View 1 (cartoon, helix red, strand yellow):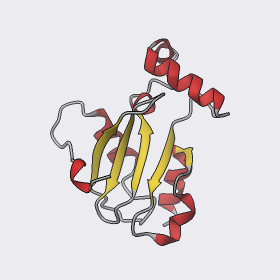
View 2 (tube, one colour):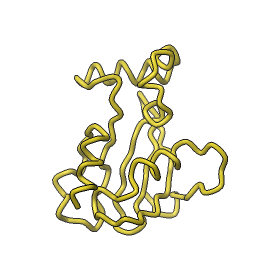
View 3 (cartoon, helix red, strand yellow):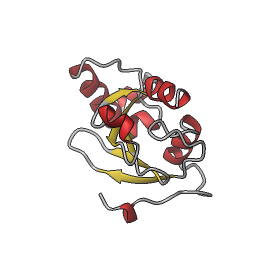
View 4 (cartoon, one colour):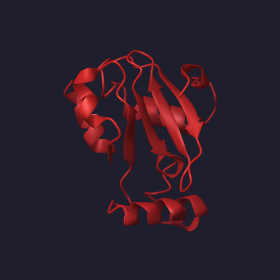
Amino acid sequence: MGMFDFRRYDGFVGCIPQKFIDTNFPKCPMCGTSEPYWKLKDKMGLTANRTLFLCDKCGAVLSATTADISGLSSSKLGVLTNAGLFNAIGKKAAGKQVATVYMKVEQVGAAQTTRLYEGKEMPIEELQELAQNL
């Protein structure tokens, strides 16, 4: 994952992923900085497209599915779209709640104390709680 592939989407009208990460994570859950300058990159997957979020302070990378970010998972109508349907099927197969937004810790970056979270996927609320406690 090259750091140069990531970019910030300030000023883009309706940049849903940028708004999503800035709103939900005013603090990085890995390093605790209260000014994470989140940068984004899309990653194509077999069952779902994901957006990767990079904290430029510690180099941690979080990700979420495009369907989760755009709120398709929580709306009944969203399940009717292909992305929403794949997202719901994937979640059910993995024993997850369909209406819950899940975030994955792709890399913990410089914050070695959070190493145990690397590669883990968890409900967004748990990750937010982690950020609050740092």
